[in-house]
Length: 398
Image: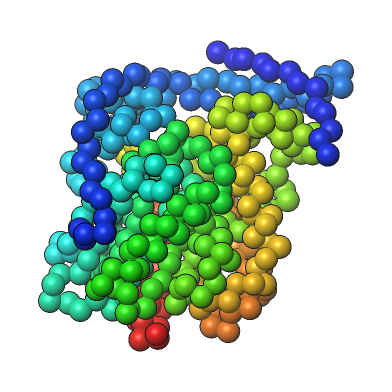
């Protein structure tokens, strides 16, 4: 099935401070069996043609027809994403991935929902070392685009927590298990403020407020982390950025003509899933076996970016690029040397231009984008160990 849309481009100048909310929503789930693919066609008689093709979702191998039916639900709303995640919880724990098989078992976890100042119900999670291990510091996580702080990060957080750190995470509005239209970022700065609001409460907890406080951002979460730092420069004892999205390479940007169309459309139908995008699965995970497991991250946003979301990401990366010289916190940047999703040269640019006196850049030979979860086991553990070692060497700073 193909739908062609033709436009004429126009110029345009826990703890008592928290409210725990159980999952008790009534819901009716509707199946969604198609996803969109956006194609740029050449100009015809002075017009730019944008074509959207609909493609049936591929069933997940190794699960029942019932689970595949659940996986095909429309994930636009949080109640359906929560239902799908619950249905796959046991399946995910049995996956043949080192993050699940080798996850430390004695870590204490907690999940809750907290309604923020904008009235949105935010999913929150924590991982704490066993009571006999003193907490060295808090580590707050910012996940990547389309992702969630559950699934793969579960194993990553457990390894960091088992090393003596309190690890905290949240799903942004519109992502994972938090309220909001799936994959929709109407204003990146509002999302950043939501993260600041939540982690300000976390850092104020009595058992954490006198400890060092670090923030960890992966991919788009790197952009979130940098924006947080630029808004409150002295609030963190250090930042860890994994394959950060802080500058878009010119060769992957849409053409000027298409950008004009997208700018117009983002104002007219901001929620439409029409922003140009390529399939990045092959580029994100170096190890084929782990790449196949990514489909079990069933609440991940997999469609084309919504128009306003795409425009916000472009706007924010340009903004960050112009302000990297203001980055002053202790900084650890980790990047796969063969990353084709976020260019490692961008991390080099950040490292060279940041004003931080304490900064480290580590490039991993042959590494792809998902170095925390998509590499061979020994590489994954090496990256995790590098994070913990960096934290250990700085957790006495306060």
